[in-house]
Amino acid sequence: MQLSTRNQLPGTIKDIKTDSVMAQVVVELDQGGEMVSVITADSAQRLNLTVGKKVMVMVKATDVSVASE
Image (cartoon, rainbow, N blue to C red; front, side, top):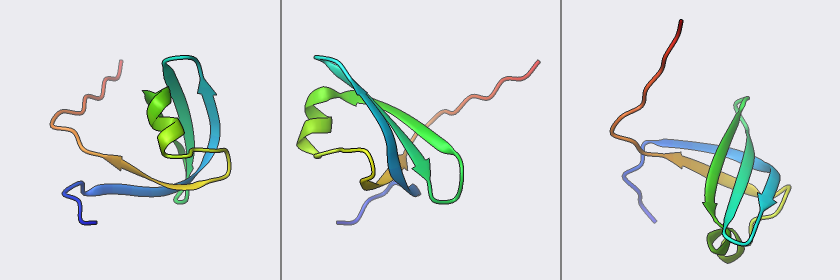
């Protein structure tokens, strides 16, 4: 599968918190740091996401904001 998403970050699922509608997935990135994604619980189940599973975090955004005081 080819994707247009340029930001592809490999990592391992560190934690998943799921309720009846949503899932918060914490991924420890191979290059260091963490990314957190909030997806539907149905998607988490369909993708068979489990702690310890290797995944690819993909980020595609037209606007990313950073603020500092």
